[in-house]
Length: 347
Image (cartoon, rainbow, N blue to C red; front, side):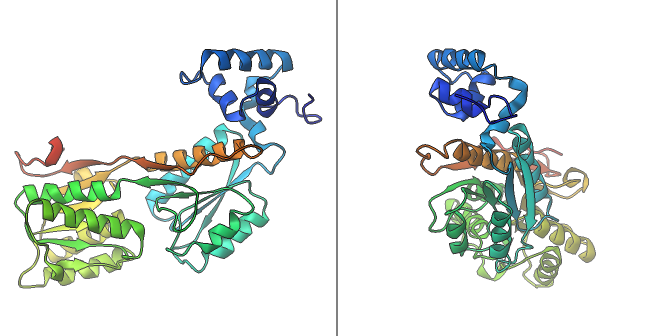
């Protein structure tokens, strides 16, 4: 067995000699406790025989390819996607890959061209946050490279994805408002065609059903695409004679628009929202935020993709779904207020 000329032995070479995948070699070299002792011994014997140097990292997973993976997000201006990209880059760098980043600007019709462009640049795999529910173009890309979806699930595709606990987080945050005695809660949401918008509305509704309260349909606003739209919708709600007693927002931009509207109206309402954001703890507002590790979404997506690349010449793994957990954090709520499952105030 010989390595590629001028490159030295690779992790793939070690795996072939040890009769394991390159990913297993990586796990052994990282002292992963989940690897059996017999496998560990075979890998180290192959390392010694080939003279493999661990500081060559997992560059070998590229197996002679471009060494690039593509990432497509929907709004790079949103801190969520910036953190997701950093998570992807962290794992990509660890395994010797470079990342090419594209931004669809939430325009589903732009996404196919971005995907085609990355494939034309010979990326070895793609991580995509779909801008819409139509994903046929991704099926075409999957004939050339593996594709992993992030933040939104596949629609008619057999591929891996990494999601957030959208339903659970929305249900828990809404339940906190209900437990505080607020029964007229407005819902400010992103487009309902988006998975996150639909799941978070479902969680909002479930929290009401669990306590026997019927949400007011007149207080539900959907299709809000940015902070400005959320601000206008909130001002409209505040102008009603029967205005809401609290607000639930489905992402950080909508929360920020709602907060700006409250400031302009010179009023304060309890607000719950998905996505933590900078300075949430010092605004002096009664805020309940659904927090999670956006970097971890990117890290998990990159690991799934690299694992698929490691199986490129063998039987690929079955499609997998990884869910990143959420937790409720409360800022500026009254003393004694407490949410479900022991969610405690953080003032």
